[in-house]
Length: 263
Image 1: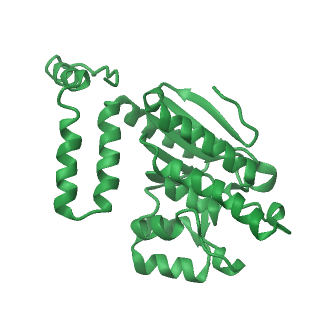
Image 2 (image 1 turned 135 degrees about the horizontal axis):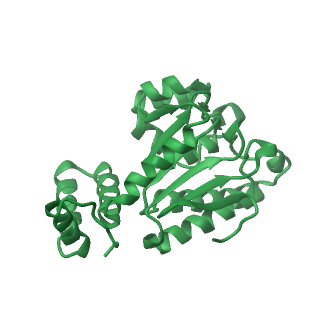
């Protein structure tokens, strides 16, 4: 498993990768190196999707998932330096959103600004009961630029998203759950366990199926219903000739758990 300066990669169980944002001394704030590390890691996941079946992303320590961009590093940057850094963050987000492998965010604390945007790049979110969220960019004279204005409306609806984006006000995990942004509220000491349990369920299913489902949902959200349903059938047909499809039917009839190989 590759090692990085600002993130930690682990295999806590079969077919699952745990990605930990690992700058707890600064609330896991995202500096240039973290952007590069996440970009490299997710580029690797995109290039070899058969190497893992589910990814869980969390933050180190009990205080924060990610406090957003490292404003101390950004202090005094020229316009060119700022834009060069942000280009790295943009590429990182595209790699995360484009990852064909299912991704679960286990939000273990504050997820502000870019940290909330990272969580929104996941397919769904589990959050600790003390977690808080905010897109604070508008209070700093900028705006979300890592998918926040696109992923948030898709999660909570346009009107709620505009309120969150335009005020920059923080909100708690119960609101995030009620608005449909968070799938499950967990106790802090069971958050990662619960996320990994769900990851194990996903990893136990046919990996071609899970990847095609993710792609079908994401593609369908960006098109009309008729086109989305046509794409769904193409995704479905991709699985008909697979060994995993045959194994699933055999296992059902033999009353045993299927063993999927991703082929």
